[in-house]
Image 1 (tube, helix red, strand yellow):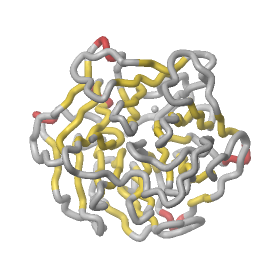
Image 2 (cartoon, one colour):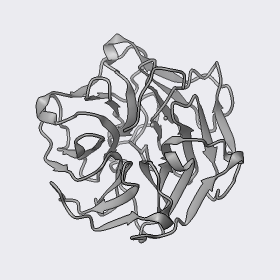
Image 3 (cartoon, one colour):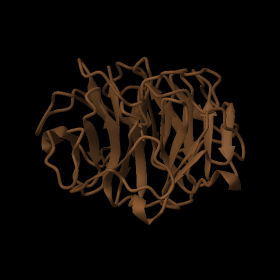
Image 4 (tube, one colour):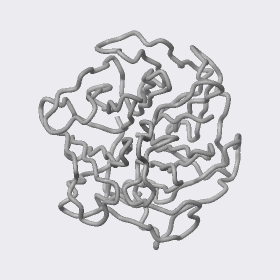
Length: 325
């Protein structure tokens, strides 16, 4: 079980993940956009932040069993000690931050081995982190949760160094409480997982400052107990990797004290979730050291369609799931 502190120091992807809807502070509109985390399968890799292995791992989406990773990014030049968040942009660039980090490292799409980040975002002007949640929208804006200060900050595409955010969502009206993973729906609403209040809040596109959420999901019917990572499938269903409850699947436009339509169980600690183009549900199991793929209609203690696990995988503390073309 990961331990959260409010000490100085990170982001469901999900991910935050490749192909998300427009960010809450962005000006681009996304009418008719496809749900954010649905990914084409051909030639795809599935990445995870391998926290206790001090690096990032990428596997072919066709890999199974005790498979070696196709990509491993680790070593002293990477600046990675315990990466605990992950996002991939539309060009395949990889974003990550160490556990409770106050910097985001950005790697080239083809990075491997002991590679230097192509840029690093952080510093006193950035007000970045401590974080455990990242998301990149289609405009290239980077979103970062700050679990200590109950805030979400947004950075311009290509941001580098000690830059100020272009938008901040924070304040009592936001209901942010130890925010971690994020996802965006096809209308640009920013969904945020609150570990501090066992809830999910969503902000309308364009939200800024001390904005009240447009949607709140909380209550005993939701089964939310430790929500960590969020994603959407192509039908608009909200997928929640909850470290205590497993994977909770909510109907499109769920709100209030809504019961999930499915609850996939049997994980040691679900800490990452994403949906592919077939709406298969991919899950990072932090405690087991595994990546699982499930059918779109999986429920209960379902058998995965495939599982990547074993000594060859070097999986050790898998957090978040993101796809890369």
